[in-house]
Amino acid sequence: MKLFGKMILTFIAVTSVSTVMAQPAIKYGKKNVFVTVTNLSDRMKVDAPVVITLEDRIMESATVWDNKTEIPCQLDDMDADGTKDELAFVITLKPGEKKKLKVELSIDSVPADRYPTRVHAQMFERKPDKTLEPVTVFVSETDDKYDTLYHHGPAFESDLMAYRIYFDKKQTVDVYGKKQKRLELAETKWYPTDEQLAENYGDDVLRVGESVGVGTLRGWDGKEAVYITPVDKREARVLVNGPVRTIVDMTSFGWEYSGQKIIMVNRYTMYAGHRDVEVSNIMFDKEMKTIPDDVIFCTGVQKMPDSETFSDDKTFLGIWGTDYPVNDTIKYGKQTVGLGVCVPQEYILRKTEDQLNYLFLLHDNNDYQIKYYLVAAAEKEEFGFKNAQEFFQYLTQWKNDLLQPVLVELSYP
Image (cartoon, rainbow, N blue to C red; front, top):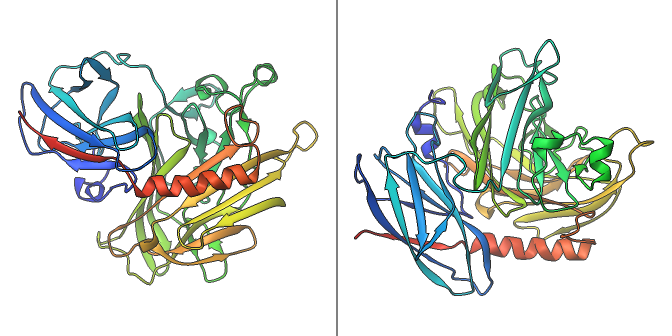
């Protein structure tokens, strides 16, 4: 089933990912493609994402080779039309290192468990008998299904961090922090038991309330962030689910905002080995035209009562703070977390704040989308940051890494 036409999703691109357009080629049989990846920075690239778009190819599988070493990869159907059209993998490169990889494309399928899963996404519909049914697509035309979905919307993770998206007018990005590096959501389903907590599983570390949480896109009324409501229909979709990346779409049809009816797709992409998430927000009016430049949106990070903030005033906002993660302040103690957003400057109008959030005001720059990145960290991580200074140093380097993705070049035998 198509989402709503290949045209819309053609506009999705992510500036931190090395993405190239493969030459139109075969529809049947096998084809070898050579991919040269180069780290142009003076820092090691660990699990750097590489994405190659496939045009007019009917392919069921791919294998990527670094000499005799196979690199885990996946082929994804990005517009749900039944044809796989993107190849994705991650690679680690030393400073200045260049590698020539061989990609073998095939019409033959491969076992689903060929590679170890390094990411995970899930969504559950709560049935009348209280059982949970795994679903990949969930639609509401009545906008009252917040409690129908278990953990209130889709959730996704790497071994470093997990997030969920509320399936309601807030569509807030919430955060699940970990103590140890591992995938956990399949076992905890966001809500760990007392026994799992005793075994050092993670849990929800942020009380988002009415805020933007971390990196939620909202409207702007001139004074504060506003919800994505009313809408004709909401859709949540787990589009891609591993082994090296997961993608979740939240689509709002007929959002009445700023005198228009908007179709908006919020796409969240998380790669193996990453704690950050790439966000692409694709927006059209009801006639499938781009949104006028004077329509303003916003994103940012929520405020916390005991916190320190950090920003370069141009592209990123960060906060390190402590608060109760849930309303139950008797059973659960306070948690300390770091939140950050990084937005390419061409989408930013100015920096501002409202009662609940530190924000960037945004516009779509006449290219149908607003792209940015979000990230979170929990102080309790055994592998992470222990204070604001360490987290803010990470944010600065994170921004620099986003500006220098791996260079990808294609060639054919």
